[in-house]
Amino acid sequence: MDESGVGEEGVDGGAAGRHAVIPRRWARYYLENAPSLCWLVFANVAGVFVGVFFYLETLPEVETLAWPVYMDSPVATLLMALALATLLPNLGRRLDAAPVNLVLAYLYTISFVWLVETGLWLALALNLHFGLYYPDVWRYFGVLVTHLLFIPEAYLLPHFGRTTPGALGLALLLALGNDLVDYGFGLHPPLRYETGALFSAGGFTTSGVVLAVGSVVTSVVAVALAARAFPRLGSDGAASR
Image 1: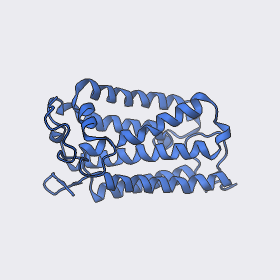
Image 2 (image 1 turned 135 degrees about the vertical axis):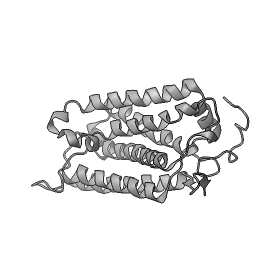
Image 3 (image 1 turned 60 degrees about the horizontal axis):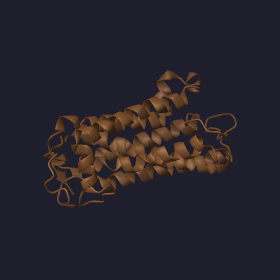
Image 4 (image 1 turned 30 degrees about the vertical axis):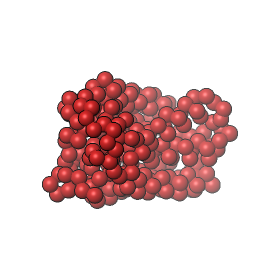
C-alpha cells in the first residue's frame, strides 16, 4: 500500500474534503490493503447468507420474484459486496486510482442508500415495539448492532465512488418503490407485531402507519445523505463538487 499522503485529510479525492464520516486514512487502510479489502468483501457475502437464513421460515409464503424487495438486508450486503469487489483490480494502487464511470456511480449510490435506509429502518422497527424484542440478546442487540454498522460501512463508498443526479433520482425511486411494496402489500421483513397493509382488507394498524411513514422518511434521508456525501461525477469522469 502506498503510504504517501495518508494523513492528508481533504487532499485526496473521494469523500475527503466533503462530509467524510469515516476518516480518509481509515478508508485508505481498509480499501487499499488486500487482506482488509478481501475481509470486507467476505464479511458482506457472509452477511447475505446470514440474512437469507433469517428469512428462510417465511420465504415460502412470498412469491420468488418478490424476494429482492422482501429481503432488504441480504440485498444491501450483496450490493456492498459488489461495490467493494470493484476495487479488487485496483489493489496495489492508491484509492484515487479506482475506476470511475457512470455504471459504477449508480451501483455505489444505490448501495449507499440501501445500506443506510436498511440500518435506519431496522432501528425504528425494533424500537417501535421495544418490549417484543428486548432483552433477547440476538434478536434485539445482535440484529440492531449489525444493522447499524451498515451506516458507517456505507460511508466507505464516497471515498472512491461518485454519484450523479440520475443515480440519486433512481435510488430515491427504488427506495420509495420498495416502501410501496412493503406497506402496500405487506412485504416488509418479518416482525413480531402486526402492521397490516394499505391494499389489504383490514388496512393498516397503528404500528403499520407509523412504520410506513418512518420508512418513507428513512428512504428520503438515505438519499439526502448520499447526495451530501458523494462527489459528483463530471462529464469527463472526474469528480466535481
